[in-house]
Image 1 (cartoon, rainbow, N blue to C red):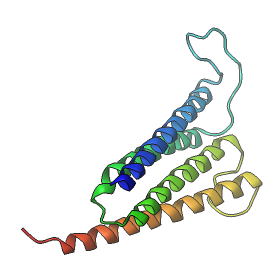
Image 2: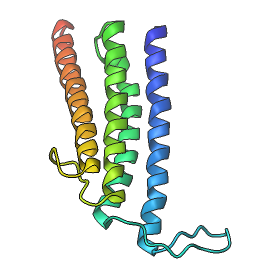
Image 3: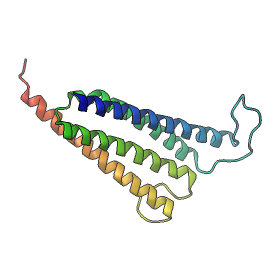
Image 4: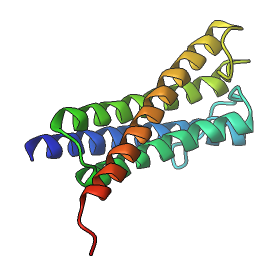
Length: 161
């Protein structure tokens, strides 16, 4: 039980940090939209147009929010997945790695030109984004597939009512 609680707390804590990163990216999105850096009631502003596009900023902001909430969701669901302590730890870290890599990769796009990370190559920022996305997608696919297999096979082992 201590292992489960530790995994849940790691997921909740990292989920909160990923959400906070999404909120910070949201300020970048706001500054992009208004064309200056200004935070009311703090006096003054900096006349600066943030780089990037509307879609890139929106996606980066939403990736932080969605991935942070996904970590919280996994923390809630972890107790019902039939898994050993070792597998539970691997699922936990797989989701944490997926969340961070996907959010950081999506934050590269609005800050650097031609850095969507959709394919390998191009400029350095694009290559870094692609590799981060690649790691995150492989991790999340493994976690989801493992949860599906374990949960469905575990359901078959339970008596029918």
